[in-house]
Length: 277
Ligand code: KIV
Image (cartoon, rainbow, N blue to C red; front, side, top):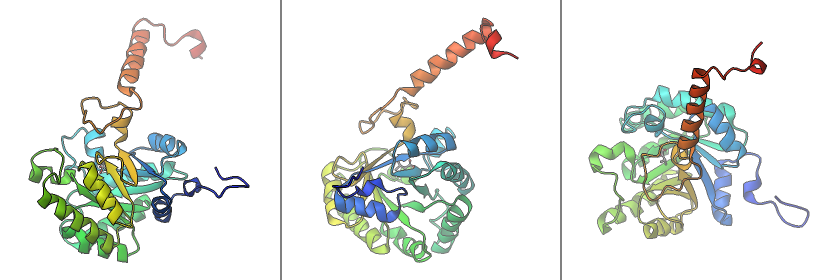
């Protein structure tokens, strides 16, 4: 925290905005982002100081149990975003536009973004893709809606990639990614997620852009980091890529706690007299 002798850190703001994350890049203060999908988790993450809460379409996987992010709908995303926005005090809430809600044409994309902002009161939207979505980004930004881009491994294109392996390992794809990043910046994106690309390329793109980059599996030279909260908290342990660091082991904790509850119910040791009326 700032005191009488030192200026306040940019991250000490009472409300993180798109301007704050830009200032964090400029001041060299790393941006901490995490996914959130529900009220209770969002409340805890916000209180713990997460700068950016991403209502990711990974909700399709971790909340709904789908194999990919493709099935989740705009209605579902609006619902998750509403729950998250109700909980927060400080974090910037960015909401994924789901597959099928923005690729058709930029008018449809704008309508989707407006729904997210109006119905969920979110602060920004995120879209996957490069040059092919740049005109759409421009249209949404022109309407006053901040847009975060997403390059590298873009899970909505999984059937096109055919694999979740690291992207842009060859020079042709790396060159395209550099060009896409520049195009998205020019289109008005306020930040870019870089997913699962070589650390060196992510560092290069980060240095070449004036907007912040937020990495996931993209090394330590991006302006910030994001993880899927279920991975970071050890709630979904069947997904073990090397970029995930587990800060808790909630799968074990919850399984043990619930097992104890079941056993207390069976043995009639719950509820006790003190837990009854
Ligand atoms: O949907 C999501 O969780 C994401 C992050 C992995 C960046 O897009």
